[in-house]
Length: 161
Image 1 (cartoon, rainbow, N blue to C red):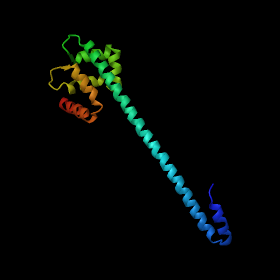
Image 2 (image 1 turned 180 degrees about the vertical axis):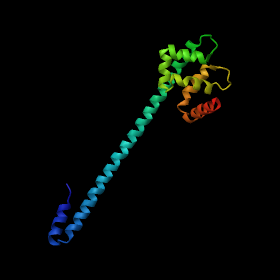
Image 3 (image 1 turned 30 degrees about the vertical axis):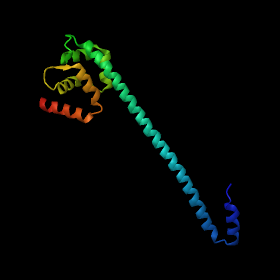
């Protein structure tokens, strides 16, 4: 244990005016130690939270990579004319008829109503077709570049008006 009582009790009995000072010192030291312990606990919790967020982000990135591989296979399957590129109609038909394509798009927060806007935003040369490898690459990187994708979609919507 501690030896505070061996010193403080006889001192307080002999000189009673020292009791409040000794009490104040004991409380300050106790609160200081508790504060130090709490700071360590909070720091460890913050570190664990940061590691958990990194792990979650890594999992999201891994899932996105898997989705892009799956999306490339789905786009190849949707490419009815075998051109290596998808027209807007092929994308819309794929969204309507292919549950796998719908699932991948929904995981990327792209609804059917967004498909035309996304298509025109990614069709930079206005050829009416998107190379599906490039389509997959652009969609795969859009979550990491939300601002760039938002700018492209805004630019397309402004040009459309």
